[in-house]
Image 1: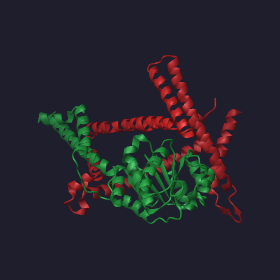
Image 2: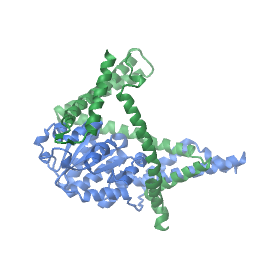
Image 3: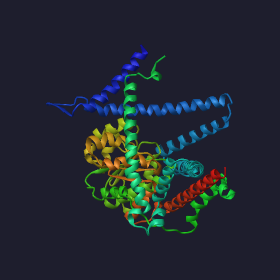
Image 4: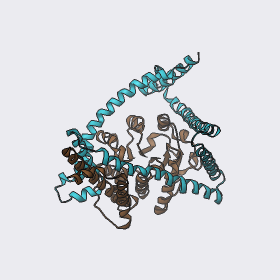
Length: 221
Length: 271
């Protein structure tokens, strides 16, 4: 019974959006009857999404709590997680509801001076990894590999001012930024358009399977 | 020859040190390089130059600290252009932190052009819901947004008077690591609203087809796009400061790839 209700709700939810999109705005003298409901259904889904974020946070808390309870490897970091989460929640709550100078200072300290630099630092490590990976991985073993490496070099230099500086004395047509733009706007566009078509057809097939609850993972046990 | 073969075995620590040097050097020695303005950046600039000031722009700023280096200069350049022209815009974000970053930039830029919150710009804050939220927004903006980032009801914000739905929006700008195609599917497709994307360099190749098809009227690609936009606005901002280290890092990676391949080919011949 539960499985049937879930499948029926999934089907009706998808049917609503499908019909609203494909039915014309005006059918004879009548307007599309589903269009006035797009906005309230959308509001409901926004609240629903908010619940999903809450469930995600709750799931994370349960996972870290279990790590502390059973003293699994790295459990000390789970304590740090709870301290950081509580501190940020208190700082944001106080700054939003009672924005005193102390609350503002706490918020600035945690968000602007700790979270932002930490986030930027983690992402900036990628620059070093990518340089090392490119050096080790981009080896010319075949003709296709050579074309790929050559294209990568042209685009990498053409996308930054140094490409123009290196080739500014050459005719405009063969300057690196122009060749790079051709690779991106013509060759890459054609190839990626083919990829998008494939992804879109796959996404339609997947969407229909999810809509009709045909996926095995959606079986309610 | 054996020495040449060793070119493919440079220790990773040396690679990291070289990359670090390439990035830090421009902050010690001032370097200037010519800027080539790409077609997609010029399209974005021309679109904003020709916008009427009777409608609002929705400025979606959905990026966080990790991608700040590429998207902060883009956000600032676009906000400068709109505030310079007196075009009203509403900031929103589809991630929790995005609205805070955009608010900080808008407050800074507003002081330069003497623009007021609520009159020239406002911040709707974090709106979740992806495609459902976008569809609801096109039909009824006040009901979908309700309050701004500061808790003020939308009907009390002067610039939001008379703004009902997508017909009152002249442009949508989405600045994100990978901007969402839902804006194209659910806004540009049915209503024809022009859209500009600003993205990280690494995902830009996936968005060029939309420029070619006319579904996007402009695209800012990473720091390069921000620098080009700054040069069109004739000011040197964060983009100009960051593009030089990026240029040197790119040149270094190319040199390392070439050296690695020389080493590989020589080693293969020696075997």
